[in-house]
Image 1 (tube, one colour):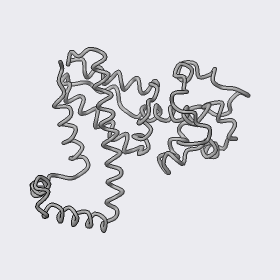
Image 2 (image 1 turned 135 degrees about the vertical axis):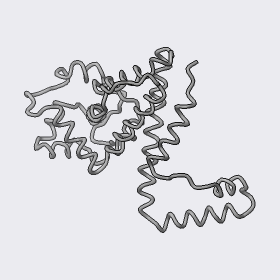
Image 3 (image 1 turned 60 degrees about the horizontal axis):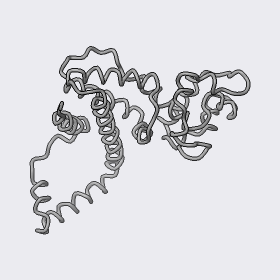
Length: 238
């Protein structure tokens, strides 16, 4: 989100945001709940993208005056923090772990992918450092429990989870762009003709060999699973 008074994620005080929310409110007693404001912002982002989310648009969604929203979120970056944690609450955290940390980590990644596809703005929102709200912390706790059998220390476990989340966000962001690109068949066909021409010019033998290989399953789910397996199966525990 840009403009509209946003001051950057670094300005958000997680202590005040998550543990002392009532102290951040100013003015008259709020007429709406923070949950309702956040849900309206999420619905707007889901429908129209992150750029559509402004304090004015969210206020209109809930039938409030724009200034009254500042009782719940001091600026748009704070609102975005609330939105990220809100959708993190959709991630299940009570499922039994198998004890096979690689299998459990892959299951966690698939849950993240589904959540990000449901909220296509989420990968971009995660591209800057975010504070850990209660829902995010619950999912992190679940992931750390999945990593317990590895014997890794705490810092390494946090690194693995951060790496996994970054991979899923990056892949889903690319997946969304690819889906948009395939809506133009002419462009897809033109790119295929171009690569075929380049591969046949004799100056790109490695590309020619790669393109001549049998085509693998190209469904988004299959592609994600293949890349995810490479990532997690290659993780060590030293």
